[in-house]
Image (cartoon, rainbow, N blue to C red; front, top):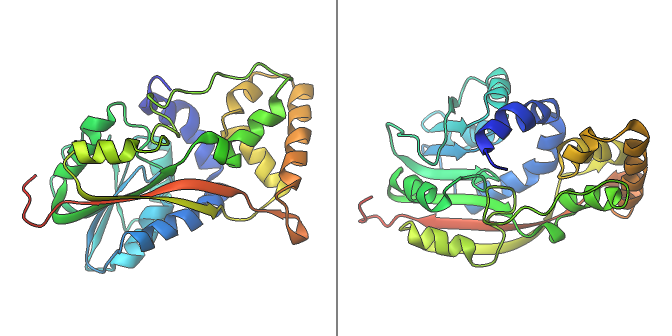
Length: 276
């Protein structure tokens, strides 16, 4: 992902807007867990980094109440357009949270899978720290390695031997798994000046989906999507059939599919007496 901002505006953004309902169904359980983990309170000022189509910002606004405020920031104009259609309550901002000069400070910076795409993560996390009030917190969830997350690797398995698969992205580059190596988050946050850094491996489950809907979703937004777009219809159909078979292993009663998710839950703090 050489240019994440261009990618989220020209390629991924429009697709994720079209898949917004399915995306929320899968990801909301993880985002809500993070809100519990973050000890969110009424009246707080919250920055939602990588807010996408707005689900998390809307949920955060419900929790901080009318006495609080939520700013949802994202680099993707198409996704922010969808967020604005859904609610006018959060403040929506098109910007790179890793460098944008926000006029006010926040009590909590929250992110559901939005901090793995910084071009310069060390600089970005230092900037986020500077946006927090004394005693303020950072809380985010990010993916552990690809091999532990079927949401990402099942599509690749289905396509294997049918098409040439892309090389795995380096964790040194912006992408979903850039923060997956053990110890990397702790090092980045400590370097950025955060205190009380807490990183917990959390094994959980994505929201349930029906098999056919989930298989179509994975072929459009998963790592295999780029090669699917370049493949002929008969090949795509073969990949789709193979993927359906792989997903059957995760189907429960009634045919609904629930995939495991391996993530890091992260909390850090700016000490009350610490100047940014």
